[in-house]
Every structure is written in structure tokens, then in C-alpha cells.
Image 1 (cartoon, each protein chain N blue to C red):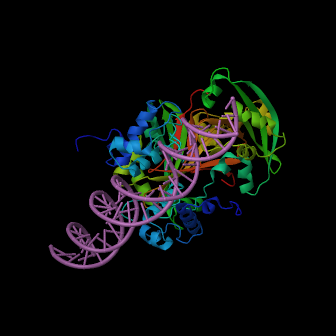
Image 2: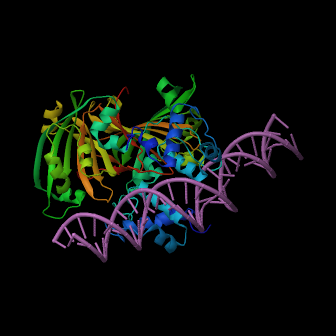
Image 3: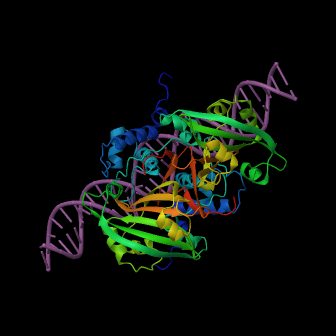
Length: 258
Length: 258
DNA sequence: CCGGCCAAGTTGGCTGTGCAACTTCCCTGA
DNA sequence: TCAGGGAAGTTGCACAGCCAACTTGGCCGG
């Protein structure tokens, strides 16, 4: 219990994560060059004193992150210095801002408890008649507004959120301490026009375009714990995704309904 | 050689892909129910007559697609009926449109060959003085314009593109037949204002918002083969991504520069 | 000089084994 | 009735080995 998790990769006691972390650092620091070739799996296995299977597991992580290619018959090639964020940096505005060295801020505009509508029951997998907690927050970077966040929580989670002080910055952290875990998320990204609330909070005109990210998050057991809709001012953020023939979790949809 | 590749998953002759395809179908058809629990790895292994390792490999595919959870100590749980698209559906507007049953169209507005600027050399990893081929295309769904596509090709690829007839619908298909393969892509999604060309082609006002997807694609050897910038009319498309604590290839960036 | 063949190197795929970590559920005892 | 302990079940992690498929580069012959 003495050492705190500074580098989540390396601190976790599994071999393949340590190897992956070490290789990632070697790659991003340029040890193998841009478009350079990695040592063979066997060589790496000997170098790290692990089995080839473990090396392969580590390399699978890097491949999924888009750092290296992988094809039969030839050595792996360095693709780029892709800086992939951890899952928590993606889910938590606070984590994300801090990891960039920016000062995150937030203000809770409203928190209401009301019956869930059909869409919310669908997303959060609730039975008819269930209630939800809905929050509206303005989020700032170094004091300037960048995003409006509307989040719908199921009762179990909402009760905890409602008890948090209104000026708390991060919500995922206290939730985690209460045993609410976030492990899987589905994101949908598109453009939407600002409504009256958006315009007032963000200081833009009504109808002006915002980058919208809708996100449904579930816990390890597959139970939805959050359904959120974030609206960013244009020019403040962009979303990056890597995918490959081997694995792709990205998809492009025709927009239908809302 | 008799059976043609209808289902890419099942036709490929590897065991774990076949198992993955079979499980995917069972899940999406609801055999295990929403939020239902999958059989144990050992049971699946026996059922399919393969080793547990192969089953695990298959399940890793489904987990990456966001279909099932995965944690130590308990059975896997069905997450949702996530319909993940194949890589080619993501890269090729034509493939994507056809997979939705829509009729894709396109018009080549311009094709020029000129020296690459600094950003293009950076993206396509070209040496100073290299030339590139730049295309501007209007893409339509069932006749109505939805997207403007600006693509920059390195010389090797551009020469092939330049020889294609101007009215060809798909470009990835003929390129593949010439040995140009697409295997990895980095996507960045944000909002941008329409310039004069965008407005004229898409029939919107200058300055009105467009959903922009920038994409750099590389071949199996890691060599960039395409750098494209697609601008969609709002309301026509949305992008979906799944990620989890186990693997995330998504990231959120502060926008800097262009 | 060029083309094709061949051997060496390398990754993909599959099996089998063993153990550790964790969850779930039942049963016991207070 | 409820809390706690423990056993069974399940997945994660690691090792070792074997073969197939594929790429690369060099050698040889024309």
C-alpha cells in the first residue's frame, strides 16, 4: 500500500503491462526511429526474460493504440508517436484537463429528480416508472467556458451525486470511492445547434454550432451508470481515434432521429 | 475454393474468427439476452472443439467491439447489440453507403498535382520538394450532396488516382487492385466553418458549420497512402466509438492550430 | 543486368498446462 | 434475520512448444 499508482501501466503488477509500458516509452522517445523496425518477438522475449506469448500480449496493446503495425512475415514497424489517453482521462473532464496542465472548473447549474422518459429508460435500461437524476453543468478551462454537460444518472448513482457539494470539481472520483466504477463507454459524436441554455452558458448565439459528444457509460457488470451529453464550443476540442484492419471500434452512422 | 467470401469473418480460415463470428451472431440475435451471461470459456471451448486459448482470442474480438464485458471471477455479460462496421466501410464512402442500402454518388471537382506544403510532407512523410496529388470531390447519397472530400495522395498513389476515369464512384477498390492497401487509419473529428467552395458544393451558407473528419491512412508497411479531410453537412452523419478500461484508442484533444 | 527461385527470418495461430485473483452463492452460526 | 466464512466456479496471466503463412534478401542462372 506504500507506492501510489503514478504510472498506471508500470505499477500494475502484470508482466505484459510492464513490457508494454517500457516499449511504449522506448517508441515514443524515438529509440526505434519513425518508421523504424522493432526487434523480433523472440529477441524481446529474451531481453525482458519473459515468454514470447507475453511479449505478444504487450505488443497487442501497442498495436491497438496505433503505435506499431503488425503483419506476418516481417518485423513490426513504428507507426507514429500516437499519444493515447487513459480511459479515465476520456471520461472525466477533470482528469483530462489536469493531464494537459490546464485548470478545470465547473458550476452545477441545476440538479433535478424526475421520472425517466422513454429514451432515458432505454439508455439506462430502467423499467417504466423509474426516476432519474439530471444534472446540467458548465465546465471551464482556466476560467473560460468550453462545454455544457447534461448528464442523466440512474437512481442508485444519482442519489450519490445529489449529495455531493455543488462546487465539487470532479464527480467521477467521489463516485469511485463509493464503489461506482466506469469501465465501458459508447461515444457518439456529431454537430448540433445551441439552444437557449447553451447560448446563455457558453456565451454564444442561439443556433450556433456545437460539437456534441453523447456517451453512455457502464460498470463492470454491464449496468449503465451514466448517460451524458456534452456540447463543446467549436475550436476548443477535437476527438481522435485510431483503428485498423485488425481491430476497429469506430463506426460512421447516418443520423436518424435525435 | 467453392464458397465465396460472403461473411468476411466466417470465411477467413482461422478458428478464432469463426468462433467470434458465430458468437457475435448468437449475441446480436439475442440468444443470450440483453445483459445475459455467456457460457464459461471452458464450456465454449468444448462446444466448439477448440482450446480455451482460441476461445479467449475470439472473445477478445467481441470485447474490443463492445459486445461483451470481461472481468476476472465471473462470466462475461452481454453489453449491447453494438453493430460495428468493418474497416473498409469506414474508409470508403462507397462501401459505407452501399452497406446502408443507399446509392452513393460522387463528382470529381478538381485534381491537381503540385509541390507538397510543410503540413502535407509531415503527414505523408515526404521529403522536401516532393509532389502530391490533391483531389476535391463532392459526394452524394441518393443524389443529394452530403460531404466534400479533399484528399492528398503521395506520388505513387496519386499517379494511379489520376488515371482513373473522372466518374468512377469508388476509389479504394481500384487502388486495391493495383496493390495499394489500407490497413491503419488515424481519425480526428471536429467542427469547422464552410468556406466558399464548401458552400457552393454543399448548398449551404459560407461560414455555416460542418462536421469535419481528418484521416491519415497507412499501408501495412506503415507508409502513408492518403491524407483526407471530409466535411459533412450537419445532420447527415455521426461517428460512434466504443472504448473500455481494457483498451481505448480514442482520445480528446484541445484544438491547437489547424 | 534482370528475373526468378530458395532459404532464412518473422509473425500468426493453436494447443496444453498450471496457477493466481476474483466473484458468487450457499451454508453456517450468532 | 443477518453477517461471515468458505467452497466452487470463472477469468486473467504466464509459460512452452509446434507448425503454417508470409516477407525479405541474396544467390543463381539466363
